[in-house]
Structure formats: C-alpha cells, structure tokens
Image (cartoon, rainbow, N blue to C red; front, side):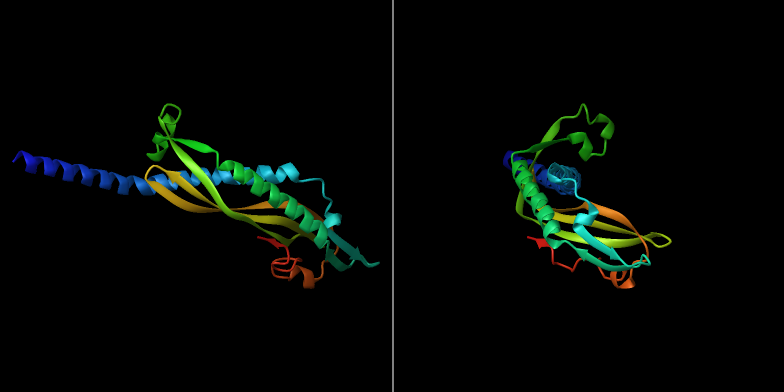
Length: 210
C-alpha cells in the first residue's frame, strides 16, 4: 500500500507541475516578449542615433520647380540614401551582437500582473539571443498637409529576430521599427505621378539591405 501511495503522490506531483507549466507558460511568454521587444527596439533606435548625422532633405532628394512653382522633378539621391542606411544597419548589427551578453531580470510579480510589488518581488533571468542578419528597407511616403503643401517622409524600416530563453521556455520573436531619416514640407503642387506612387518616390526594394 505504501508503494502505491508513493506512486499516487508522484503522479499528482508531476500532474501539478505540468498544469502549472501549462498555465504559466503563455503568461511568461507574453511578459518576456513584451519586455524583450521594448529592449530591442530601444537598442535599435539608440544604435541609429549614434551614427545619424545632419542630413539635409535636399541632400537626399533633388526637387526642381518651374517658373510657376510647379514641381517638375523629384529625384532621390540613391547613393547618399544607401550610404546612410548602410551605416545605420551596420551599427545596429554590431550593437545587437552585444545583446547576446545581456540578461534581463523580470520581477515574478509582473508575471501575475501585480505591478505594484515589482520593486520588492524576486526576479527571474531572461536571456536574449539575437540571430540572423538585420534587414532594413528605406521607405518614403507623401502626405498632404495643406493647400499646395505636401509632407515627404523618408524612413528606415528595420526588422530583426531574437530567441528569448527563460526557465522552461524558449521562443522566437520578430521586432520591427521605423527610424526617421528625413522629412520636408514641399510648397507647391506636387504632381500626382509622384504622390500616387505606391510606397512613395523610391522604387520598392531598390534600397533593401539584407
């Protein structure tokens, strides 16, 4: 009888552990993913700011008008834009490599949604392992902001991936963020041939770094 009782206790203990893991795993996944996504986004933006230099919009896009103020040409400086995008991408990749050495501590109380106790709660370690190349794509868009005024934005869309490892859980996440490169409000009527271009002035995938 003692042996059978021990077997029952072991089965109940294992079942309890499995149930706890099944209950906590989605919560842990959600909490850690949110924290790691925020951390990686901050690293990406800080990395971009470290190499961003003063770039005038006119250095990136050549805008020509006729005597009536009508825009007759909008030509992107692809070399200048590519150089800027490449510098940012390389620095982001470098900084993300350093993240491999970083361990994030998340309060246990946060898992249960008790934020008020986060300063006093014990913590568990979250290991972040970025993998794969950083992918970037230069995108631009037009937006009408007034009579004969159009805002033209140029930004860098950055995507990276990481593996998040915590006790009993290993999951992959994808982080995407947009980094503003330059913008300008263009006075004068912008031809619909430019404003109507899907995705903006730049050709799709012309300025993609993988």
